[in-house]
Amino acid sequence: MSYNRAMQKARLADVPSDAHGLISKRTAELDGVSVTEVTFAPGARWSNDLKEYAGTDLCELPHVALVVAGTLAVRMADDTEESFTAGDVMLLPPGHDAWTVGDTACTFVEFSRGNDYYAD
Picture 1 (cartoon, rainbow, N blue to C red):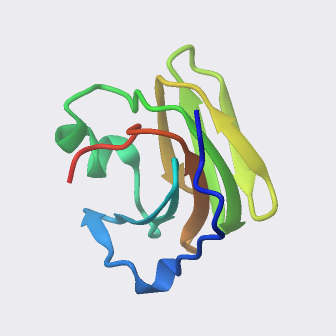
Picture 2: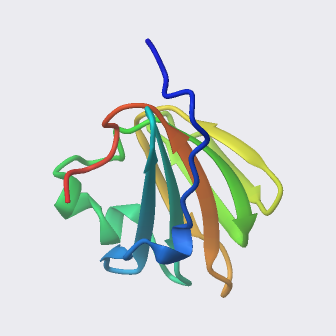
């Protein structure tokens, strides 16, 4: 795979937000890499806010992300659970549900290659 040799810059704050229920995202596209800021508002839960939109019982996308604010709880299909807080780096395989813990929004910045997000 070849990459553009020029530096690239994007500002997530300049990207319009796409919201589904209490979950919103902004995605900046660079050469071969998508960077997405995802915010789970207080009370947000993937199975309540995105399940119908995704059309699957659990989130079937992998995620590699840095949590920058709040706490996100994740439960895998095998019922294992983990919480991720600001400063944690997380790798989530497909087959999970996730929700905000407490009354503070959880924001994480996700990095991906290719089209591993839902269509707009």
